Length: 88
Image (cartoon, rainbow, N blue to C red; front, side, top):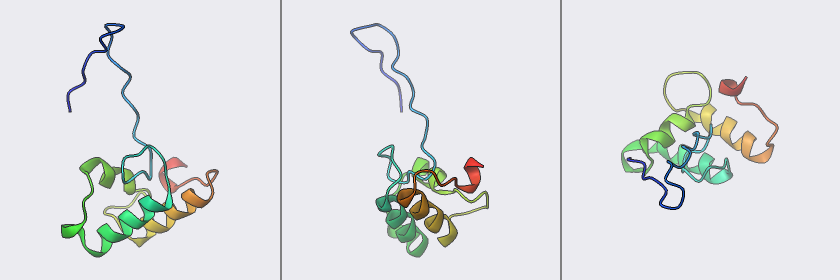
């Protein structure tokens, strides 16, 4: 995706850093992310998720997206102080 220059200031807007666990791209970790990742685990071919969403969802330092990622994302959604393995 190409960044567009801000017309008012003439500088490029800041690039938002991906949020670990944010599978749906809303810049927050919620139960919706856990549900999306669970859906992806069960039916990857029919789940609408971006490539960045898949990268954000891999939170357990292991290859691939599994139910462990779902559990960690849900834990983070319930407790914002929880650190997922990739945050430790």
